[in-house]
Image (cartoon, rainbow, N blue to C red; front, side, top):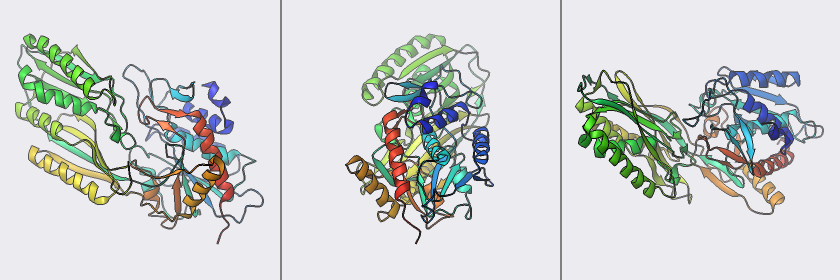
Length: 486
């Protein structure tokens, strides 16, 4: 990882190296937060940790810029913890193994945390600099963005003086974001009834892997395979023929990541195992043909498992398989107003089997409230038909686009002046925290920028090195162009 600190801009990459060295998955950010607080206090900055754990760090203006509007640079502290099945890694204790691979920075078998570690590193690098021109500066680092936006929900009025907020959580150089989707979590719970298995049946676990996964907002329109849905499809087509008795269905790990892996355990007559292998091969070939461009490397593997003591009742098993197969997933509707942007989507993210329920955790995203409400209705109707329970929680608002935003105009003009081309003004389908900040700070002018990050929320995550420097140059130039207070 030592090569990271040799990249340019050096101050930013040195901070990112420190961030990678200190574990900080969602809900376990305290060690990194404390490290940042200790550093900021040593530098003599004002540091406040609010009630929910957000950090607000304030730095005076550089000489001659005291009359400029106050700017807040904002990032989230946490990262998504995802790893490949064959990778041994404890996200709460092990550092991220970041390395340079040609033009990109990647991690060995895990998510990199460039989402939003690069943005956080840029804010801290500005704070630590003695030669960057800026007006009065605040840095807002929120907690738990990836697992529920707890920090953004908990931010209260009175902590920030900023009139302008620059969110650093965008993931495409050359694009300026002025709006984002809102969302809500949906949990469908299928009541469980267990029964005794056929005593002569053998027990196996069927697993699906090899899929790309990715961010359920940024990548949802790419048509990648959803491990939960694909495994449900296999069961829908073949469970009866094979006389399967399900004991467990597990898939995905985060509601905001497209699931790459899933597994189902079951019992079946030993004489059906050969047919199961035939059907697995045929299904693998079929899916690879269907997803030849979007996601060509799906794999199915079968392993013997210890004999099960109980299996799902026939009614529960059929209900679960039917519900999962029928459940919508992916893009529900593309935006009519913004070309190429997903308006409404659903990600069937996590499936877990408990003693009393099989729980299916989904994330609905939409640029418009009515789109989100329509999908909520779809899931409610489906749950009613299946005799399942559904609960919606954690709803967060979208960030309504403001085409007249002064700071967006500054960023756009600055980009054109530096790179002699027009940036793209965008609305992102992912959920940024800006919409939630509008509640305690309704008059705050906001914009979002960032470098190019590919495949966030998956172990394939990587950041394009040259765009980090491009983003950095843009950020510094924007800070220098912030106007005087009214």
